[in-house]
Length: 554
Image (cartoon, rainbow, N blue to C red; front, top):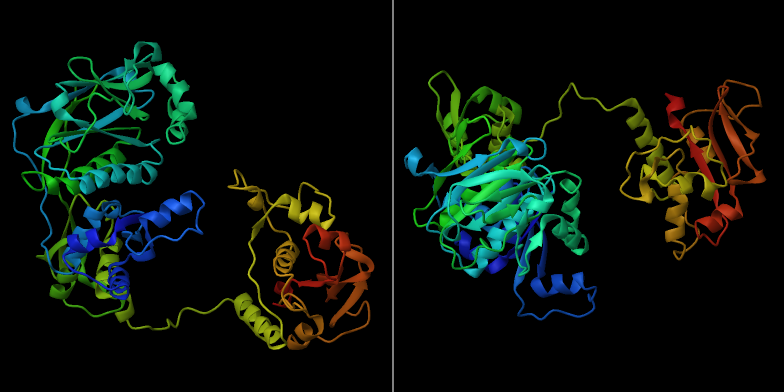
């Protein structure tokens, strides 16, 4: 889940109350978020520079790193967090956002050219009039864009946000797609004029922007936004123009979101304008922009209308398992920024979902917010009679307990591992068929699904080789397991119990290994691990290993 870094003192000032760390952790838990870490600005910088040994001073600003749900885009900045917590605490009413009442003729216009269709066909826009920035709110405004780009915008592939000082521009605006050779402008934070193809080459060495170049660089045309004077606002999704850069003195902000996904573009625009309309002269009011597509169809953005839902009280209380009255439920929903009141039919509750809560899609989302506001710890625990543990889990728990009682240590290892670990490091040949291969693995450590517990166990021993000996891990011990299972040791060929036979696996010493046969089927193997395998896992001491497939006992 995304993590939001905010200054503790500024957050407390915005919330209107000071908390101890324990008190704030409790507030976060009750609201459904988590205080992930407490650090300082200097400590973050030192860590980025790998200078962790240098100690930050006690006077440094304290930074709270707060983990928020992935679909709560309204909580990705201090302003959204503070407002949500104030409403949750009952300090504020739920804001009602509105679009400025201006005539269509007076609206700024954005015209979409048909050439944009193959590459990035959508754009939505809005204006924040009379906004006042200070350094903190300005930085938060920029940071929210970055957070949205990484989250719902999927690293700008779905949506890219452009923000501009409207007083430096003149409408109407046009959204076009042109060959790179025909696009020239001065990019943000630069002073030199670049042609679009030159700019793409230039940014290949930029650590931040080079990861977005692939989105358009192979296209014959690049998307570009112009004002009436052919001043470039932006080359989405790469960079804005320097001419319209916003500053602390900016009073009117023009926001454009180009996209391949119109629904997500509208969500992103709504989050940007609702969050920072609080700094506008007319609080919570946003000026609309008319967008005219290539076919001449007109749309007005942003759409700040509230989505209406009807949710049965019986569904909410039945799912949570707590008897609640309608008034209690509506009060809890209001604390979660959802306007709610008693419906006209029976026990129905009318819910108005604001434009900030794009995560509310179904009655189950409403029910979840009621449960959060009520408090998960306040919901009585009960064991459903219809739920029973799987037989395999019950058997696993029994064997795990018995082996632990015999002095062995349980370890939990990764299900995924590298090809090298399950083949080469175990002296095995890759047969191209026994291992399930992961497509596009994040790293070479997670290339395949393990075919044996052995690599993980040996890696654990290798990383803990300095611990006192002997190291006894849980996947060992034949006789005790069989005794627990009530399985007798029988002569070879007798299918009424288990017996062992010499095996020849490359990961074990020859002549010092055996397979376990239970009712005619091989259910495991044990032996002394081969010295070459031990060396591969950096283990200096002799090791024995046992693996049993307990499904065979069911």
